Image (cartoon, rainbow, N blue to C red; front, side):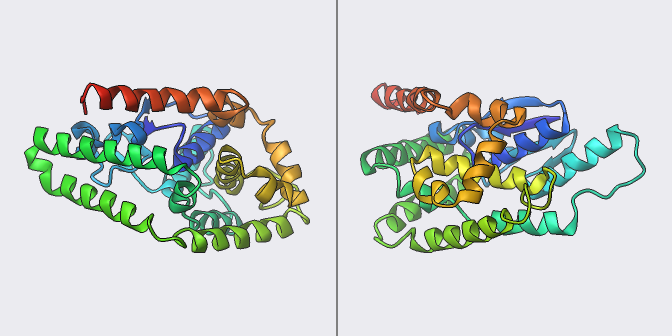
Length: 267
């Protein structure tokens, strides 16, 4: 089993948490979207959306995060030799879908300083153009990604671009706060795949230095956040890269790569 992912990717974190929680072995392939590795022809041919994660088991390839997690659950059940093919309960799946509905893209981008965001955006566009020249048979798909990059830049010029995402996030966190007043975890007293979907959202808020505003102001979520950070899966998938000074090292390594490639004009 192959997983194409990256520590920065929220959905990648979700899939890796599921794999670690279920004890499933897999081969890890880092695909950094900030450096444009998801635009390499070998990956692009497999997934023209260029999004991560991508899960591959033989000829079976899955792109959707919830579908990957449910597939991982089925693998775990089969490995136990059980005849029960039931995975997450309806309540768990409802929470998973509800959390997945919040899209972090523009919310994240507005909290990144303009000079860094614009520099990386320009770098990615150059990467796409370079890959288009290398693989003319994929020119149409690459052109679509280039247009998408320009559209994102145009949308970022709108002052209220992230307002709907912020309001959506607040409603989601308020619902979670109310739920955690009744149960230890999101869908009951045991850790489930609903928690796997939620943890990276909280980690993203911490990474953006928004913990006090969105987590600290909600006592049940704050207690929950402290609890889930103790899990081995969290420490391996997220804590390893973003706890304390490590997050600065992780970000600086990527920024250094982008700067160097831009200076030597190697895209």
